[in-house]
Length: 252
Ligand SMILES: [Fe+2]
Ligand SMILES: [Fe+2]
Image 1 (tube, rainbow, N blue to C red):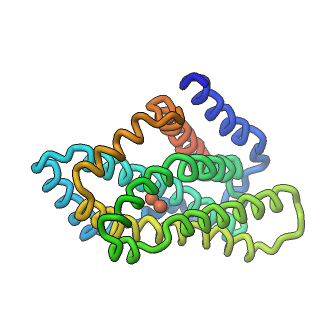
Image 2 (cartoon, helix red, strand yellow):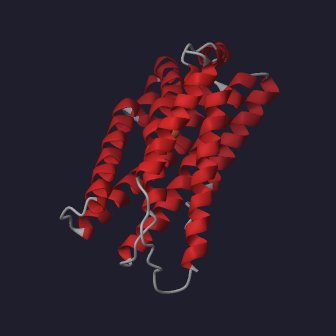
């Protein structure tokens, strides 16, 4: 399938999900507007990754720099959407009506972006780490299982939101627990990867490993790994953030 067609299909799949759920009445929550909490990216973790990236760029492994910087950027993108989801959860918790359009869009985004885009890239790096430094890989844990559990938590979030929207009987506290559980585990997973996985990979992998990973990514037959697909995800994320801004303006 041509790259453009694939990216179009990807976008229309997510846009369909965006449109199939429309927020009805938006109840403004009581109290003043509070900015969405931004999860802090530990400065020590950031310094560790920056230091290793600087060393690698000096020694000429530009692929390592490119790949890890890319994955780190994706983590920040994911965290941005988790903060939006958390904001909507706060509104739900306070008895208001969250913007379900935003929530559904975030779910759709998570169904695609980490699942089919971010995790496969990490899997390639992790496979190399297991060979170069099995002890460090063991410390990171079972990455594939972690990703699988994340997907299951996301499915539970989607089911809980569907139940609320379908007016099925569902305890608010259960919905809260399911969404909160997803947010917390995702944040923890990202923190662990920033802290343990990426620095370990930067330390242990050889330049040829990075070259192989980079060529696997750029020569990937799956057009999902194309620039067009990345731009589609960027556009979708921007759209979600815009919807959230509009909702916040209405809530004021
Ligand atoms: Fe991961
Ligand atoms: Fe990750």
